[in-house]
Image 1: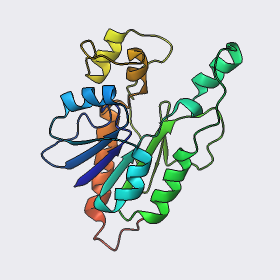
Image 2: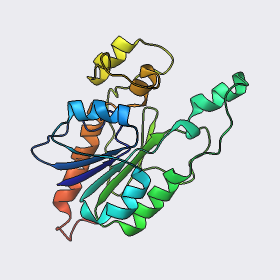
Image 3: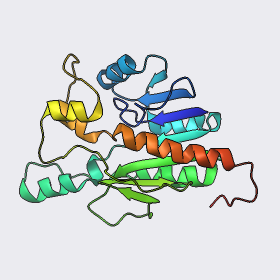
Image 4: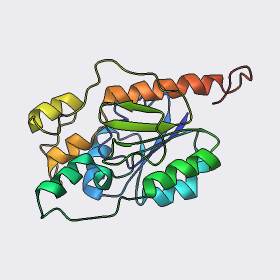
Length: 213
């Protein structure tokens, strides 16, 4: 299956996907973060650029698209910080999140999923599934998970988060806080679970007795 992994970060969602089974193209804007991704997934095609624009230009080339647009302007943590610390900069929520959900829903013929945090406001489009502090919009059913693993945003150490996700950032030069990088990751188990849900739907697309929605 040809997979497009947008806003790839260090690759938490992608870590347990089998490279031999899929042709994976990932897009990451920041070179320092891309260096980590490149180290862990050298066989993937890695594009340094604007994931939002790449989706518009290349969506027809893929069977499955995963998008994790930046979550900071939607997060409850940011709103909590604003209310408790006047130094937090006020920003509009980034509407690229909803642009991509609407775009994929109406233009893309393959399987897709968009991931983001559970926001400080009521989501403008209802998600398919909530797991932990993440929301998932998709055009295929996502089964619930037991024992969801994710970084505790209030407690924990870099070592604990490193072991939780299976990434060691010690030797990488990253311009922002490494604990924030870990906390932004989708846990690899969740990424694999969702891909497996998509693969089941992918296998059934030619069976007209199974409704698409």
